[in-house]
Image (cartoon, rainbow, N blue to C red; front, side, top):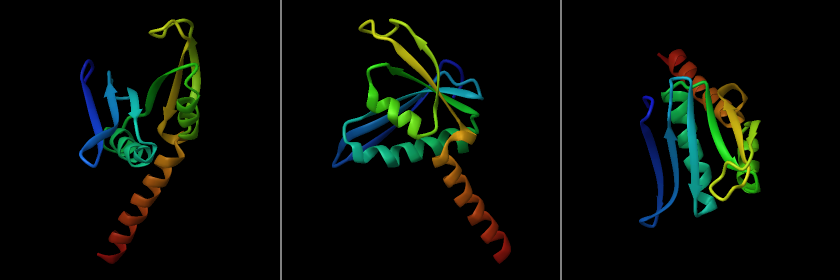
Length: 130
């Protein structure tokens, strides 16, 4: 994604959009990410797709997430992915709430490491069979 552009993925279940990822303001190393889901079971496959896209296809170094300070579920999700808290923007949210900035680096994301290791193993297996 070039600066100022965006890419989006949606997850559909029974013809209904139940989750989405929005990637924007990429500079080749970093991209801002917004996540929205209405069905928790759509989160895992959606994140897997997004991580492959950002860290694999785009080869980004990091993702940046803005999360409202009172959004505990999203903070837990970010931290579970390996993201670290970088800063707090006081009273920067739509309703005057504090906003946290989290950074997810490719090398600190255990889900991406698993995906990368699986792909590397497949490539190695294919090479030895050729």
